[in-house]
Amino acid sequence: MGDALRETVGGSVGAVFCTYAGIPFDTVKVRMQTYASVGPQFQLNKWGLWSKVEPTPPSSVHTAVNIATKEGGKTFFRGSTPALMSAFLENTVLFGVHGIFGRWLGVEENHGASKSWGAYGKSCMQHGMSGFVSSTVICPAEVLKVRLQAAMSGGAAVGAAGGVSGGKLFAEANALWRSEGARGFFRGLGASWGRDVPFYIVFFSAYELLEGTVRTHLQDKPEDDLNPLAAFMCGGLAGSIGWATVFPSDIIKSRQQNASCGAGYFGTARSIYLEGGVNAFYRGVAPCALRGFPANGALFLGVWCTNRAFKEMDAYMGVEQSEGYMH
Image (cartoon, rainbow, N blue to C red):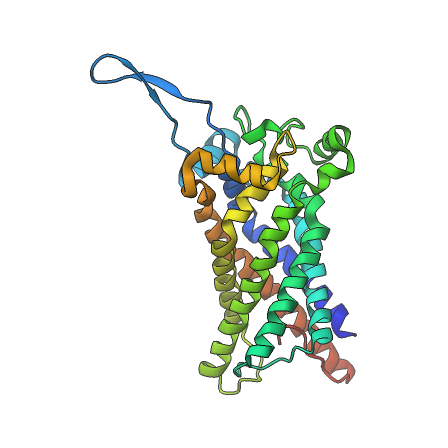
């Protein structure tokens, strides 16, 4: 079986692991990112006069508790179908094109050895180009996922777009198609590129650095396979580092994709800044960082399991073994 097909299948299996490990955290994150207050409230101050009080955006714990108590545990998995579609497309394409770009650029596996600056440059190009392609492919599924996750029972999300369908996938897709046509499914594409290209540069680079450290210092032979726990830990840490790095672009993307009108990238960024300054760009960062560890750890665990299955199959059939991205 060719390398490209192995990498594609590995990404597909990893996507299933990743989606169900991370979707509850992702729902909390999107709710926080698309939170809209009901406007200023008034209360009596200590002098008996009415004063305006700006509502404080809820914390991640408060958001999670509200979802659980007011809407039920199933709500944490609302949008899981488009999320799985998105993750399946993203990681199938990502790992497939990642290997193709790597071979095209001449990126070599180093098994934990140090790289030259030229090799690092090639690796960053490989990671960034892969992120650009996968981000473009998954944009329609991402738009639907965000709008379904933002839909609240009796609440309000920014723009009030997500929720007109009552949380139903096909109803949401139909409503979006009727209101905006095909363009609506690619809303926030620029913000997706601004998030995913740097994310995958940081994510894969961090994974390779952590993997190299494990191979060099914790294994007798650097060329040996990682064990599944090491693969999970390296993937999880790399995911948390990547998400913490690019989070401001993620909130812009979520706002654009859920808005009832087609606001531009800089217009959306300006409105977020006016809500709460720089801190507003990090609303939901806690559940995002928490999600990054189990979701991306599960992603690489899925890739590890797939590669191991292919190696066992090769050994059984007497075929020369081929190395995938993670070996």
